[in-house]
Image (cartoon, rainbow, N blue to C red; front, side):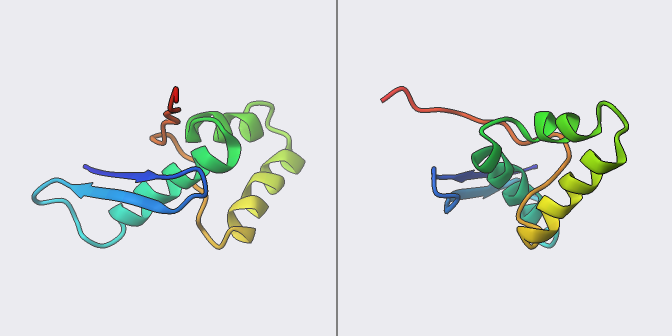
Length: 87
């Protein structure tokens, strides 16, 4: 498991990786999920579901275009959780 925390600007604050976790790929997935939460102000699961729930090809293309335009910084798959500060 890898956990990454980003600030409101999408900049990395901290990255923690469990022993034995792959150093390649997995950290990028974790960042993309965290970044998606910041951009959409929702979980990465909500992002995916918003564009795939109705099987509308136009919405699906919009989602994949957002991922492409962000140069892979966004992730349309579950795992990213939005945590807000109360201060």
